[in-house]
Length: 338
Image 1 (spheres, one colour):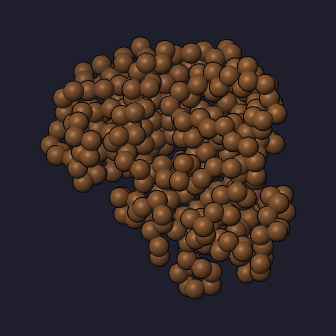
Image 2: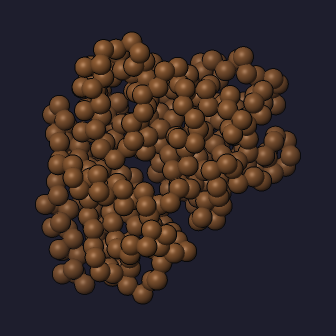
C-alpha cells in the first residue's frame, strides 16, 4: 500500500486520517470536491455521513456495494450508516482483499453540527484502529458570512474551531474586509495556533491542509508553543478558550508527567480540548510525543531523534475555562506525590 504524497507516519507508517469539519453551510463539501480533483489525492478513501447529501454525483463512476462507490479520481467513498470504527476497518479489509483499490489516506467529512472530539479520541486511543490509522489534520471550515454569529451562538461551532489544526475561512469574497478582519480576530482568540487560510470555492492545495501527523512534530509543537506563549488567555465573546504553553529546559521524569496528565484528565477532562507535546524525558535520548483530546490520550510515541536540534520539553494545551494557575498547581502536586 502506498505511503502517500505526504510521507509515511513515523510511528509505524499508519494510514493518516484527516477530519473535515465545520458548521452547517460553511463549505465542507465544496472543499472536499476540490481536494478530490487534485492528482495527489487520487488514492484517498472518503467517509461522509450521507452520500446523497454531499454532491459528489458528478464524480461517481461505479458502485462497489451498498455503501461504497469508486470516484473518477480513483478515490473510494463510503457513507457512515454505522460507526466510524466499523467503516474504517471495513475499508481496510476490502482493500486488503482486493475488493476495492488500495488507499493512502482517509478523509472524514462530519455533519455540520458534529463535535469532532469523539472522532479524534477514537483515532487516538482505539486499539482496533490505532495500529493501522493515525489522526492527521483536523480541518475546520468557517463561513465568512455567518461565522461570527455562529461562533457567538453555537457551542458546536466554537468547539470545531478550537480543535482545528487548520482553519479555512470560506466565502470571503462576499464579505467586506473589516468583517473578515473581525472574524479573523475571533478565530485567533479561540485557536491562536491553527494557521488560517481564506479560500474561495474551496480552492486550496492538499499539501497546505494535510500532513499534520506526518510533518515534523517537534518543530510544529515548538511553533505552537511560541504562539501560545505570546497569546494571553482571551475570553472571546464570553467564552474562556485559551492556549497555554509550557516549556521545560531539563529532562522530565515520566512518572511525574504521567501523574500530571492523569490529574488533568480526571479533574478537568471536559475543559481540556486538546494537548500536543514533545517531551525530553529522563533516560531517553530521543523526543517523546504526547497527544490528547479531553480524557483520551494516545500512548506516547518515540521519535528517532531531535530534528530541530533543540532538546527541551514543550507542551501546548487548548483549554475551555481552565486557567494556567490550576494547571500549574496540578504540576506542583505531581511532584509532591513522587
